Each structure stands twice: as C-alpha cells, then as structure tokens.
Length: 344
Image (tube, rainbow, N blue to C red; front, side):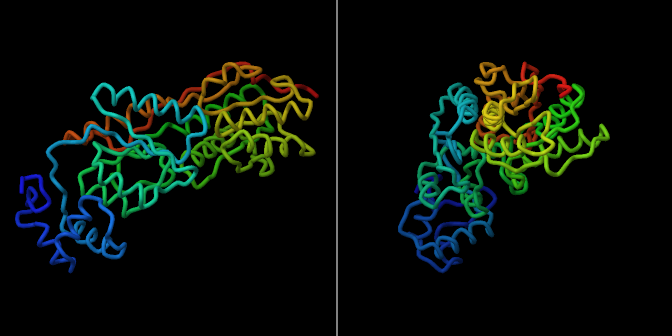
C-alpha cells in the first residue's frame, strides 16, 4: 500500500487503519474501503455506522493532491442569477486549471444519495453548494475525505465553521426601502421570498427596519411571501394592486418578481413609475432593458461565485481561511422605475 492508501495511518492518528475502523464498526475491511471510496454496494445502515466511527476517530483521508475538478451544485438553473455565479466560479477555476462539474437538482434543495456517492468517487478539489442544503451526514462524508465544502447563499444556517459566501441582504433591503421613502412613498409593499431562507428574511427585515426608522407603520396587507419567479410577482403583485388601498410602490425580493409586477401593473392599466414605483433585487442583465429600466439592488453575483471558488482553492491547498463567512456589499442602482407617488 502507498502512503495515500486506505490502510495507511493519518497524521496524528497513528494506528488508525482500515482494519481498526472495520473492527470498531463491526464490519469487514473491504466494506470500509467501499465506504471510503464512495463505492455502491453498502447498505445504508452499515454505511452510516462506518461514517460514525470515522467521525468519532477524527479520520481524514490523506490524498496525494486535490483532483482537478470543482463541483458546483445548484438547486435549479432557471435564471441569469445562476449564470452569473457560474461565471465567477469559472473565472477562478480556469486560473487554477480546474474543470467545473455542474449539478442541477431540479428544484430540490438537498442532493440525493447517488450524487453523494459520485462526488466521493470523483474526489474533487472541493464542492460549492449554491442555494442548496447538504445534510449533516453528507457534510461529514466530505470532511472525512478532506473534500472542502463552501456554501453560497445558504438556505439555512451552515454547520459550525462551514465556510459560506453571501451578500449584505439586510442593507440592500434597507437601501431599497429608504429610497422609496425618500421619494415620498408611504404605502410601500414588500414581496418577499420564502422567509425560512436567510437571504429572503434579511431583505424583509431590512425593509421593516427602514419603515420603522422612518416612523411609517407596516401594513400587514402589504407584505406577501411569494415565489422567486416571474409568476410569483405577477400573481401576488396583482393581488396587491387590487387592494382597496393599493401600494404606491413595491419592493421585491428579486428581479424576476419585479418583472412579474411590471406585467401585473400593465394588466391593471397602471404606468411605471407614474402610477407605481418598483424596485427589484439582484441587478440581472435584463433589468437595464426593461420598460422602463428597473431600479434594483445590485448583488455581486460574479464576485460571490469567485469568492467561493477562491475559498475552495485555498482549502484544497491546506491553507487556513482568514474568514469563514464572507458577505459582499450590495448597491442600490437607481434607474427609471421609481419616482415620487402621484397625487391621484
């Protein structure tokens, strides 16, 4: 066996061999080897028992070097939002001679067992999970094989010290709402995304903070939780505009929702910004070509993808990260979809 083989002892773990792990887990050595190599053919309960021993013993497999692959996992690839992140990851990967392997989970937040086994078998330089949730067991499996994980826009609180990248969502929500308040709006609606997701909750909290700071009560009828798609903005934006006292401005959790609000306003016979001001979030490329060009909060998606990839490269090279949580600044971009409220 070479020093990188599964029977070798780990630094600081002298004597921790496949045979010893097999003894502690009550399984055969070939079974431990299959678990370590991410191979199929091991019952789920047996695999979990071996993984538990590996975690308890602090086992980390020593590799000859990271594979020339960077795994990028998305819950869905349905908008330019994902493309911007991919661009950032690809820029850094190219600089370091890494190929990017892309997985889409078709709307599911957690990868399945098949994906886990494939990744463990490929042994990439690292995994970037975008708006996705890896289970505690999946994160432990990656850690056991020294495959670093970075979470971008986590949908929940990452495990302790799991590196993550995000944006200043609370500040962005506050800046967008303050802009509308400064224009003179008081009936300002908020279309949030699912509030169990930290990024959406932070944007909603920023909206509430701005309204509170201005001494403007938030009308509960003007706050809606919607889907982060055009259809959500069209449906829930339309409901807002049909209220007896409709909003004069709507701040949305992303640009796709805002685009849906544009269509809801058109169907209601309202003009933007003369009758309704709209602010989005993300600053996707289509916003500057919308009619009228959209005021939005720029989220540095390319830089976020690049930051996550740089973390992976550093961790794969055995470096310690200066920060385990990186938040990049958002910026309000004022265009032509916002104006003072009309005196109707």
